[in-house]
Length: 211
Image (tube, rainbow, N blue to C red; front, side):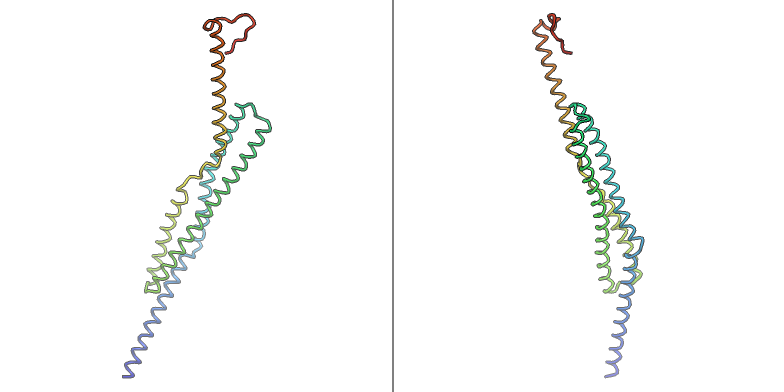
């Protein structure tokens, strides 16, 4: 009786040791896959690529804002003055904020990928404790990493930067509206003026004709 019990106990111990050894090997395979230098580089590359994507938008918006500012100042006759200097300073501040936001989104993209990888790592390690072998564990880890990267890449650039220079678009539109208003007022004045001389006939000597 005692001999049979000892044999069963030893077998159970051997089974447990084998299970633990397999779990350890699987966990090591999982960690090795997730901790590879290539994966570390992927976090940095995603951050840099995402930042570059949003920087392109920031630069395009800055170029447009510069044009809007030049046209608005020219229309209002304020080019070269203190207003231009003030607006130029504001433009620089807006651009700095856009650069900061682009950088933040890049860093967030890299951090999000790393966090998703860590979540997958812990899930696979739990599976390893339940009997997942090392070969399957490594394969599943690699598959999870590929899926995480694809999702992170598409999600990181899914949204636009937003209008970082909206004030300058408004400035440009306001200058257009003001110019149109001035033209309207001038045309209205010419119409009234010409009507007073018989429907557009020549004005009396000394009068000023508006074109």
